[in-house]
Length: 197
Figure 1 (tube, rainbow, N blue to C red):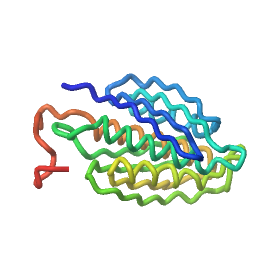
Figure 2 (figure 1 turned 45 degrees about the horizontal axis):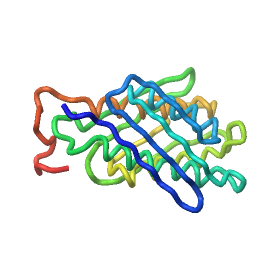
Figure 3 (figure 1 turned 90 degrees about the vertical axis):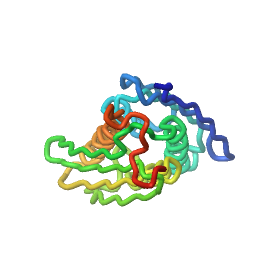
Figure 4 (figure 1 turned 135 degrees about the vertical axis):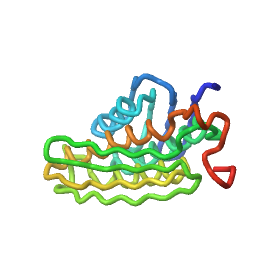
């Protein structure tokens, strides 16, 4: 099997980003983005998805976190799409339920080739440690638009906003892991009746 790795650089007037990803990793992560809470959440993707991530970003944080968070999502999506390749032999679909104390989230993903995000997370607070939680929708929208996946995210229960978000990212990592796993019964076959994704 070919290595499922990618390195993408994206430079704009607002952000300069480098993302390296290994879909067949061990969950190693290295981040230097200037946004600690985002890094904590991306660490969940790596650990629970068993993908290696190395992400650096120099962004216009003197304005706010928006451009940095959204553009990291975009660049991660580009790297993921490149690393996953032609999708032959993968499971394609993934899903996970993850609890954390009182919080419970469900994430379902389809590596469909069609970008779509349906995200329902009724946050109980507007920010965590000064981080605007609405920006996570921008992160996932950027990822979806550039990875060309369909993603459903639902926080089913939760009172603590940190717990709500963490269950979302853990479930996303686990759903991603399931979707990118190789299925030996589908070796060399595109998982679609159309013959292409």
